[in-house]
Each structure stands twice: as structure tokens, then as C-alpha cells.
Length: 272
Picture (cartoon, rainbow, N blue to C red):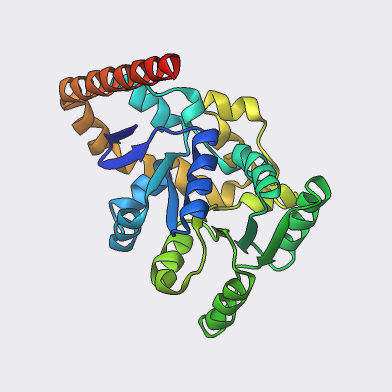
């Protein structure tokens, strides 16, 4: 289900849906970008032409932020809490499926040693997981070497975790040379696994309070992101509210189309 809000387009998908998308990209041997939107990325999207270009290349843009879920529901869209997928919640189901399906995973990002430590922890939990890492603190001169490492490993899944907007810029700049089926922009995913950054309690994530935990954990780095940038989005919130009737008409059409599709599938199952 594709919906538009705050001037961007997102897909209301679950963790299971995303894993199936990766499976499809591998089965078809195609290259798909799976991106995500939260308030931070929406802010950058409207200020950075490269970010806008990156999102035009993304096949799937999942929701990574409860504020977007709450806002979509206010506008009338049938979005559930399960449609908020953050990497802290997704990484283990993803790695479990990668192990089961034999997918090779390459993680690019983090400080030297951090990603390798996270990969070791993951392999302790998923012994048959094929994973390789490279830190994200490489120079432009070293970029060629990084691309060669990725190409030699031939990953099915490439996770780029260098923070917004650097990770999106890197994918866009090197897209023609990246050899992977699914390209994911994963932020600080492996920093959490390695324990370099404390993981917010999951109940806070479900309540939309994860930002508060992160702010108190890293106030000097994140104060502007959480306390200043959202105010710049106020005109976009107001524009959505001014067009709320149109949003709700779209939401009704989406709900109707979803119901008809489910009904058709049910009938088909009964007849088969």
C-alpha cells in the first residue's frame, strides 16, 4: 500500500513483507533499493536534491518512525503499528531468513571494528550466516577498494549504514557499480548489535518515544535532529491538514481496493 504524506511517498509494509521483497529480488536476480522514511529523512528530502534523486530509485520505502504512522492514521490511512519497521526490530528476522535461504550479507558502515564485532555476535546466533563487513570511515581514495570487496563477496543483501544523508549519497553515487540484489540503507543498525550505542527499550519504540531515549543517550549529536528539525516540517503538516478530505478519500479507496483484493484471493483459495 503506497501512501503520500508530508510531500513524500511511503509503503505501508511489515517486516514479513520486506523479507519477501528481498526474496523476490534474489529470485529474479534484480537490484532493488529498499529505503525508509522518518522525520529526519523527510526533512532532508525537502532540502537535498540528491536525497530526492535517491528516493526516486527506491522500489520500496518503508516507514521507520512512529510519528509517520500516527500522522498517516490521523489522515485516515489504514496504517498499523506493524507498518513501522526499524532496523533494531528487523535485523534479527532478516538475518534469520538470510541464514535459512543462504543469502550473503555485506554490511558497510560504522567505526572500524564495530561492524565486525556485530557480525561476530550475529554469527554466534546464526551459525550458518554468510556475512562480511567493512567500516564506514573510508576515504574517497579507498572507495574503489570497498567496491571491489563488495563485488568479490557477491552479496545478495548490501546494508549501508553510514547515517543520513551520507549512506543515501554513497548508494546513489556508486549505484552503477554496486553488485547486490537488495540494497538497504540501515543507519546505525550494527552499532546497536555491537553495543556501541545503547538499544532503546522496544516498548518505547512501539509508543513512539524511542527518539526521547536516543536524545538522552546522545544529546550533543541528536539535539538538533529531534528538537529543531521537526519544526521545519510544520508547513508540510499544515498542508496535509488543509487537504485532509482528499487524503481521507484516498484512504477509503485504498481500503476498498485492499478489501476487494483479499476477497478475491479468498474465493480463489476456496475454488482451488
